[in-house]
Image (cartoon, rainbow, N blue to C red; front, top):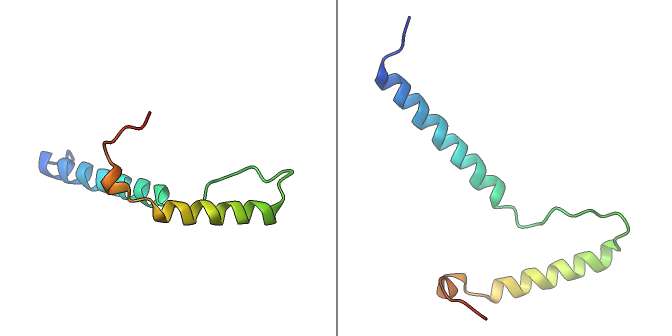
Length: 69
């Protein structure tokens, strides 16, 4: 039995919202994926902590749209 256009539209919107939500959750990860072969984990963790500390100091909203050369 064919579905009504309203049901098809509601299903498409629901699937789109779910897809966007899934992408947002995946994009919110704060740790990069790296190849750890040959990497000193202690040095990596120290570098990552320094990078996160620096990133916390940067006001992204006020820098949006600005261009540095």
